[in-house]
Length: 197
Image (cartoon, rainbow, N blue to C red):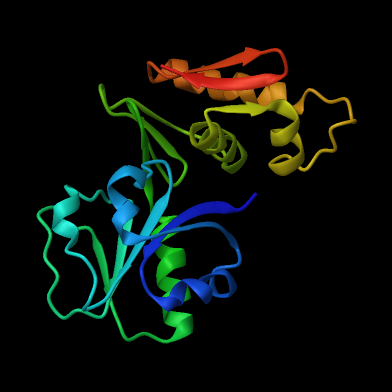
């Protein structure tokens, strides 16, 4: 399953991005859509140039935002990640990949960094496997998802094959979430999974 990546830009580079970042699931939006569409459960890339809007009007940008700019001086109160251009194509791809790999994702009282799952309210933490992390992040992004989707897209199991693999993963995830005393819960309803607080 591809990692999701929100990109906000106003210039013609958006036509080039699907080729440059083909390993990601891209959602491309205009800069004026930032305020309502910054997604805390995935990476956000903001591309600005001399003629673009002043991002300070959009409030505090979180650590899950990477700003790519050709402007010499950019300053923000909370100093999000800033990448100054010009860069080669390979440098740009590598910096984006590094940014995504080191992204901290937050959902209610949970924070993820690499495979570490942290309860922000009490600082309890545990470690997830890569598959457990993928399942949990997929649930957070979609809020409600079919079990078949996870089987086919994360576990790479055809939906017509009988297996308890998904249930085993879910059981371990729930146990780890209970260990760190999070308010977030994974519920099963019919053949769907829901994440709630």
